[in-house]
Amino acid sequence: MDVVAGALAPGDLVPREAKLAVVEAFGTKAVVAYRYDARERERRAAVEMPPLTRPDSLNLLMALPLGEPVPARSLSERERRALKSLPKGAVVRRDGLITRQAVQPVHIEMVFVPGRSWESAMERAERFTPFTARTVLVDGVLRRKDDAVMRADFYGIGLFVVQGEAVEVVVPPRPFVRRRHTVAGWKFLEDVHRQLP
Image (tube, rainbow, N blue to C red; front, side, top):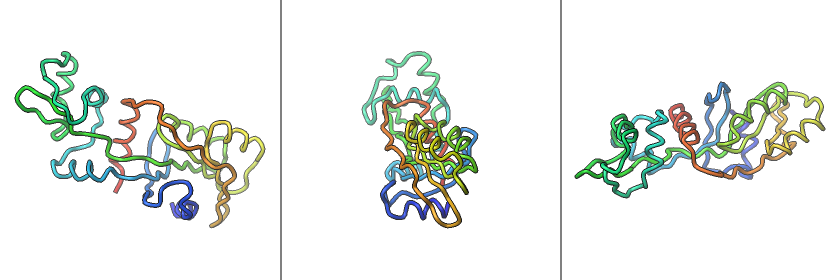
């Protein structure tokens, strides 16, 4: 994590206010640069709301407008079942109306996947493609550098080489552009959020 912090010190790749944490996602240990949604964090703490991990719950929440009351009778049978499983604080139920309160609790700026070989690190980094910008950290000598640079550039994956305390940015990561909001994307954020300090 110190290596990543050193590489990010100039503030060019992620916002300076981003924090770092080691998390596990998609079978990979990685360092994430993240920012909390401060308002949502405080709201969840105040109502002691647990993380949202059920896909059916997230699907329902994504179908509800934020802060706008929706008649409960307009929900399908499937949505009503999901509504019953929502944790306290995700919605407000009043006078036959459902009002969504929950939003995504954290924003992931980038994920850093370490590895001794660029091939295996990039393979693991590609698992994060739909969710955030990715960078691999290769520890030691970069073998077949031309191939590594070409693949990293093609897929938009940052390629950093770590030698001791020095970090060389061989290929800068391509900024992440969210194409759509999905249940899987929200679940990824909730899973990471559970692991953060």
